[in-house]
Amino acid sequence: MIKFEDACQRVGYDHNAKRPETAYKYYAYKDGKAHEFATRQEAQAFSNLVEYTVSNKDEIHAFQDKQTKGEIAAAELWLKELRDDYPELTDKQFGIIYDKAYEDGHSAGYDEVGLHFQDLFYFCMNFVKAGE
Image (cartoon, rainbow, N blue to C red; front, side):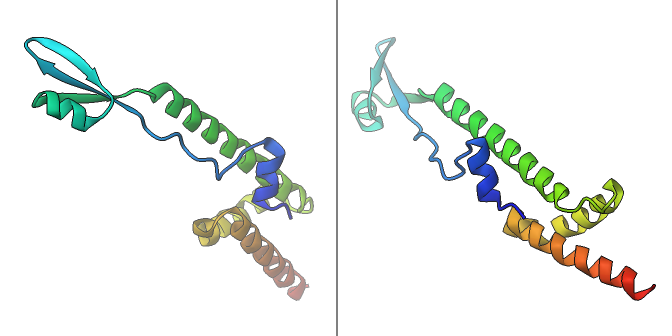
């Protein structure tokens, strides 16, 4: 069974990557003019009329998009590999076991779902064999 970390590495997804820190620009208004400052303290020292904006929104959005795409690719690979481990199951059988495994284990991560799947698979197989 593939580990989720292995799937991440195979698709080039670093789930531990750090989000860029949010950078701000501060603006203080005085005498009808806006003045830009590097810190909130500087702006407030200049005027009581202060506002700010995030100056690196594009960088943050690009990071989040990359992370989302990476996680989706890793999850798809992980699921495909899990499916390939159980060729004896029909897609419907796989789906039924997977749904229960996901319900029971998703809060602990993909690898836990895989372990639950494995346990449920063997339980189902033993149950069927016991009826023969």
